[in-house]
Length: 295
Image 1 (cartoon, rainbow, N blue to C red):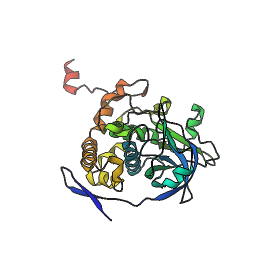
Image 2 (image 1 turned 180 degrees about the vertical axis):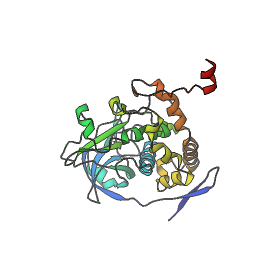
Image 3 (image 1 turned 135 degrees about the horizontal axis):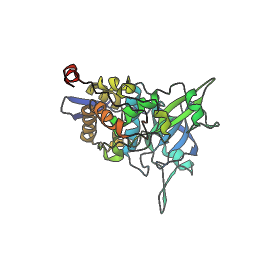
Image 4 (image 1 turned 90 degrees about the horizontal axis):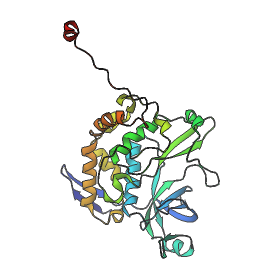
């Protein structure tokens, strides 16, 4: 299997170019959203939301989805399993709906290796994208709402954070979806802004009172190293980033440098975001005994 090497400041790293994980067998329906993804049945028996290389947003969106999902998994956050999906030219030619719609014309979706995110639930049922607030206490993994803040600040997600909710026997399970606009979208850059990356329903953050409420997520992130990040990127098809291994290497290096920056950002921003963290408590000032005696 050929490798794709590139230089980083720390070491020389070689990425294995993967075979595709699964084959697309059938298009089910077009999904909502600017990337114009499609729900597809694949050879492993599962359904995937597939984003194509020639989507209207940017080819790098596929890298962002793959890398973002893998990094979130390493932090122990709830995401959907991802796969590299091979879509054949024959399937595209035989499926009239497998097209990208542009302002003045439409073109067929690209063949080859695409990004697939495992569909939550089953295609005939309606998975919830929002929950009434009275149902939020019934989300079994609700602590991960705060964990995703740590993640989104680290990866510079410039989109609103999106979740899906699947109803089990007694409670809902939440998964975080859509990592396409991590790393500042197709630019692969980092510009920190306090309001980016939050869920539309800010009530999920009401329990946050201090920086301690972002544990264990902050400590997990700070415990990563370059090897952890490189491992998450292993297997990304080189065509997704136009074979520019240097650009991917710079992205991974920036992620490594940012790991220990996020704690301080949250300490600074927490008190300044009362609409998001209304119960944030300012640290109490302790007056030295010598000053109290003088007074």
